Image (tube, rainbow, N blue to C red; front, side):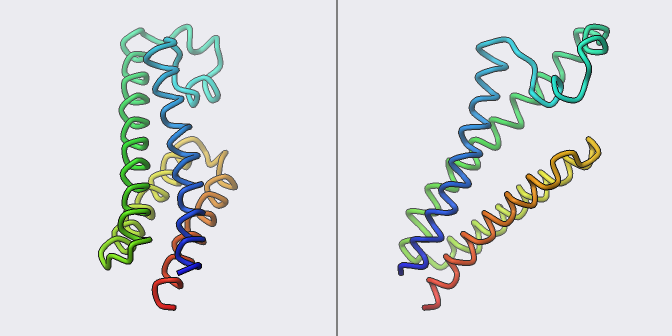
Length: 142
């Protein structure tokens, strides 16, 4: 049981960090009128100023939608972790693992579209989530 709870804490840290990041981006776009950080990081200000307003609006809309989906995923995963995995429900850990891997794969794929500038961050993120899930699995069998 102790391994399962330790794993759940690691998964919670991973989900919490991603939840705060995603919600922060949504608030920055919707409330503060900023563009998604990826646009500001990878497109120079001079180039951004020449983009058509509809193109910028599309990037903003996709940034809101993608980050809201990531935040919703993290919130739901936190519930599944503590109400399902820790409680020992058989469906919870496989479900959490599959959707976690899909989210990580999406992170690697989106990073590849930008030339993999955040590859090390994605690997670290994968190791953190993977270690939490593995500890949960070990705690289940112990």
